[in-house]
Every structure is written in structure tokens, then in C-alpha cells.
Image 1: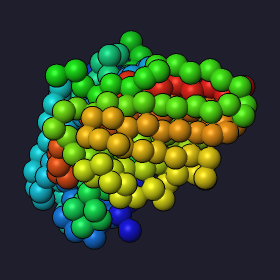
Image 2: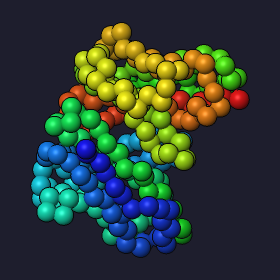
Image 3: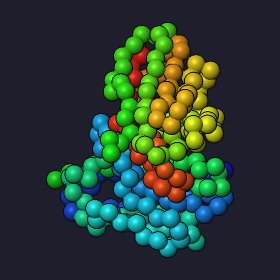
Image 4: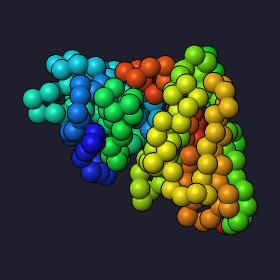
Length: 113
Length: 113
């Protein structure tokens, strides 16, 4: 069945460092891919999404490219800030599996000044 | 748009008591999801509805858990009887169609003593 595997955390970076959080997926069809962010004490919010191969989603300096050949959707940011400290979830939605929404386990990021 | 509204925000109860969590999805959204989040297991899908009909409840832990969606604007998740291991944050989320993003509520923090 469909699933999402993402890099385990926690990740700790210094401010202005480069961030990569790896995400790979397994899907029977052609899923849409998402990154969600959860700040402390809050619900999940969409960070970015991509709906087809080679699409690049971007928001707030974060980017991720839908790579069908490697079944990946890695999250990157060139220069992280303290305010980026949160838990990041990779997710997919696949029409072939009845509109289910699959989340990865989440990666906790802490950015220190 | 008020977003997905969950109540209560916090619930503290004693083992054996019945707990009812409530969710109002965004108007016009036809899919609703209930998730449970814990440190140990991350984000788990409990059940989801399409057009008020339960599609997949395989994530519901056991018969103590039940969910209903009597109409397009309201859903409940009930635990009867509650146990300490049910302590978690319960999120409700909704979306308009399969390739669109999920909107999350702020969650209900449940503590069963």
C-alpha cells in the first residue's frame, strides 16, 4: 500500500544553516505530495505541495521537488531561522487509494541562534 | 472562513468516563479526517469520511472508539470507556477534494487520569 518515509529527527541546526529533510514515498498511482509544518501547541499547516512529477512546491523559503524517478520529495531551505523550529511532516494523497491521506512520522527541527 | 473548529481545546477526565470530541469542518469540504498524535506513535489516522460516509475506520484502535458524521457540518469522536492510554492530542481535518490540502483544527488535548 501507499506510505511515506521521512528522515528521523530530531535535527538541530544553527541559524543560517542549510536544511534538508528527506522524504520518500510508495504509491500505487500518481499521488499529490505535501509538506506540513506543526508549531508547538498548534495543528498542522500546509507548507507546500506538488501535484505532478517535476513540480516544485515553494513557500517561505522552503522548496521541495516531486521526483518520480526516485520517488522522493525532499524538503530544503537555504538559510534556516529560529522561527523555523517546528515538526515537519511529509504526506501524500492518492486517488487510487480512495482519497486517503498518508503522513510520515514527522521530523523535529530545532534552530539555535 | 473560520477554519476547522474543534472542541473542547482541553479535556481532563477520569478512567472509565465517556469522552466526546467535536469537530466542525470548513463549509464546502466533503472529506473529514480524525487523527491522533502521541510522542510514541506520531500522527495516526483513526477514521475518515467522504460526504458524511465513513470510508476507512481501520485506524480506530478498538470498539471503545466510535465516530459519527450526522451531517456535512459536524462530526464527533467518542471514547467509551476512556483509558489512560487514550491520552493524546486528537486532530480533526477537512478538505474539499482529493488533491487539495488538508486543513487542520487546533486539536483537543485529552488527558485520561
